[in-house]
Length: 270
Image 1: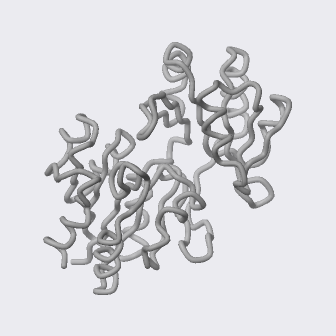
Image 2: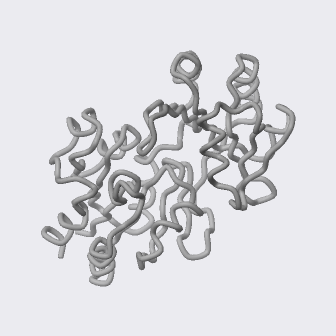
Image 3: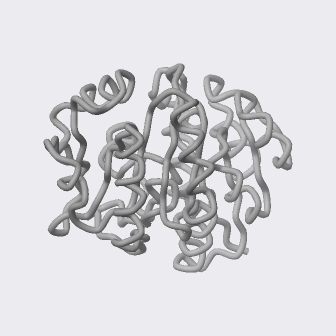
């Protein structure tokens, strides 16, 4: 039986300071060297995920943007993608804009990832988050709402007050994949919109098939890991996980700051 280990990054494999311990890197690298299959399944992009996983020597494809993409970890090739219908996402964006809530819009533009936003229209928290990424090659500020509608759009993010985000969540939760949750590190709320097919569960199943794996073990901490847990043969939540995820888990292990994932892999898979 061939097993794929799929692991969330922030709040799970990464410690609270957004780093990975040398011990965790060593355990995962030993697991892969011994013939094991390991991938991360993250809300991050490939660019930001690579920055925090530099110590991992994993040749397998990885899952980004909560299952929107499966990408080759070596050359960045897109092996699976989910993008919005153009007419649908235009309506979503303009509805939000007309209500005074402005997104950061992620798209494939001329075959490259870009994110578009109007700086002065973002909430203070969202502006601070985006400006903290200055130098990112995807960063594309624009001046008009129409300029947000460029390329193949695959992901929208909103950071704002709950009373502004919840109406949008209620309006679009049935027509696309919506995630509404607190940030892992900061004290603000996210609303994320993705195409229906963009789910960690779908991407993990597709990757397992690509690799010839017939067993899935998953690790997570957030609500965006719920669907991945549902399709896993073994689902493990870290102790700092959301209570809903713990309820779905086969077992709750120790915390992300205690190298919980690596300890479990070492004890059970090596």
